[in-house]
Length: 341
Figure (cartoon, rainbow, N blue to C red):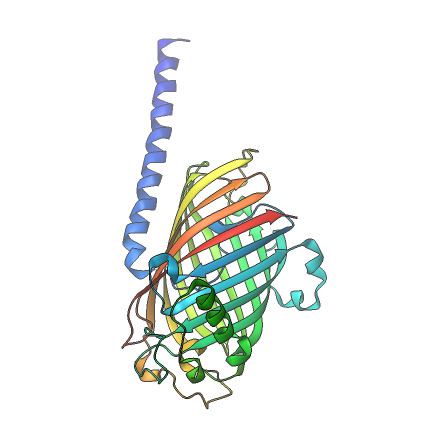
């Protein structure tokens, strides 16, 4: 190789490195600028790309509890059991799901239970200016539409269920506290009364920047409408470690991956049945008023994920700002275990 060709080759490589560094700098700049304005999501939501399981068929169990952050208040427990299978495509309700064109589509079904309490569960009387007792039990039909070549992902879900005593929140919390020898709750008689809940949601993700299997920055937007909660959200997610991104078609074929994620989100909230009661039944003994609602809510989720062969393991913690004016910020933790079927 001549001296001229050698010099040109070195110059070309330096330019490539410079372009990569500048792209990384732009990604971090976007993250830093956007961080104060980022999204609030429903407590249990496995549709995000950083929670992706790279199988056509799988089952996953997720458990949230504020025990992991040494509290027992507000969003105190959540259980999510989901199944994904190509056969669920033939569910008639799957036709209301929206997909990206020429994308890889997955179809799933989930059962979700969530429980909410005020700050002090030992009191039998209504604790005004506090979080109402509430329990929710829903069935969720969802689809995940992933288009790796363009770095896009669309998650849509239809949720139907109940809020109130029929969701058995009191029985579940009493059983757990009895087994652990903890203080028994005394105020569930004041919980939000029975009502039907029905919601439709859509969440769109787009890959802003990817550095192989080591780093990725995505932006997301979401909206929900129905009788359960109504909100619009905007957020970012940052993933780093060693992983196969579902928003990239660069797969390494490895059986072991481990990575960290951070996902700040901000939402404009119009309605939340766990605070304001159901839309049809307005007889609940105590709810948060419209004037008390915080319309802008911030949440941040951070976690670690390990995947090995057909197994998915995750631990995460979440923080949420005040959801109503007389409330407090709140934190909780969670575990997820999934396996390919």
